[in-house]
Amino acid sequence: MELIEQVSVAKKANIYFEGKVASRSVFFSDGSKKTLGVVLPGEYEFSTSQGEIMQVTSGSFEVLLPNSTTWQTFSEGSQFELAANVSFKIRNNAIAEYCCSYL
Image (cartoon, rainbow, N blue to C red):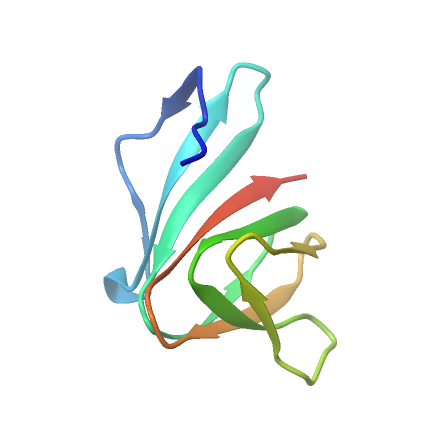
């Protein structure tokens, strides 16, 4: 298991899609932030307000990236990058987890 050390974690979870997606914000001493999340099976559309790198930490997602018509599969250990102010879709058939780094 990979650990993230010397951080502060928000007590309150970020809850989306009626509880089917939940994450916790992790804050670093340099001012940067990541979120660690769990996604229950389903299909969801997200929007970004800043650039992001989404790393799949457990399970897999199919992702419809901005300006694409083809779903791509990202499995545990893989990642994809998103620009600021875009929308994208994810879908999964089993519980999956992610770590989102903000650019």
